[in-house]
Length: 151
Image (cartoon, rainbow, N blue to C red; front, side):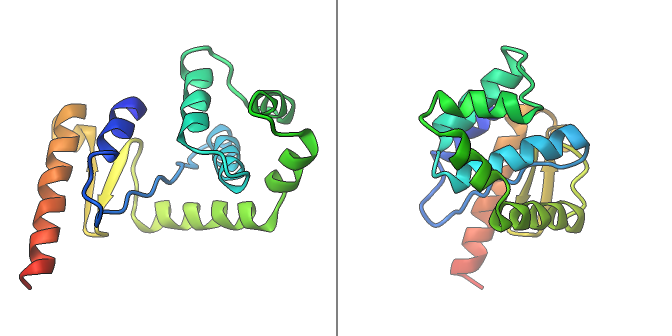
């Protein structure tokens, strides 16, 4: 689903913000969430996120250990010391806490889930499939934008 969503988010109007929040439902996902925020703290973008997705879901390299993650980010010019500094930082730990609070507060049942303007929670299952998820999201985004223009 990530490739589909990544392409879709590039088509969103400039006044629509898209924020990706990693799910932290299990310990393995928490490890990946910390990696996600570490990469952001290091200033690495979507290309590296895509490489992480490919590593985990295509290559089967789970990136579950510090050693695996350090070896992975070295390919992008990140030193072990810089990785550790970001990975163990207050900022990354705080982002993990905020992500967990958001997921719990929005009552996110699974992934992928889209939350539109804090009002609507959509999953592929509730929308009738992955392609329909994005169509329903576009409808709701348009609805929210229209309401904002004409309260």
